[in-house]
Image (tube, one colour):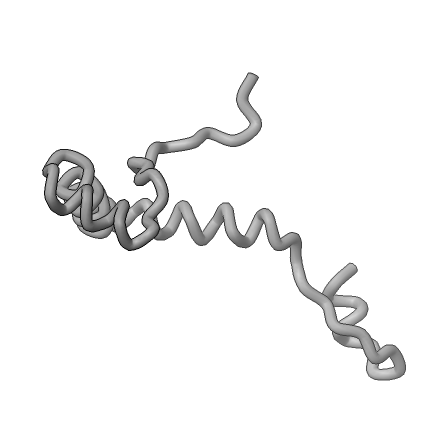
Amino acid sequence: MRKNLESDDSIDVVTYGCSAHQLNLLSGDLEGVEAVKEKVVSVIKYFRNRQMPAAWYKQRGGTKLVLPQDVRWNTL
């Protein structure tokens, strides 16, 4: 349907796919880069497990740090 709307010159519409699906695909691509996820985990653990950096983070108004976790969509 989207291709049909794009090919019809008499209709002036913007077509795009499902945003949630696009974001899910993007997150899957980013999860494939394990080095990025490992670095994020190490930074979060550094601030979470050390007293002074955790205090500095909290003093600057930082919120609770949450470790990334794998999520499976559409599961029961």
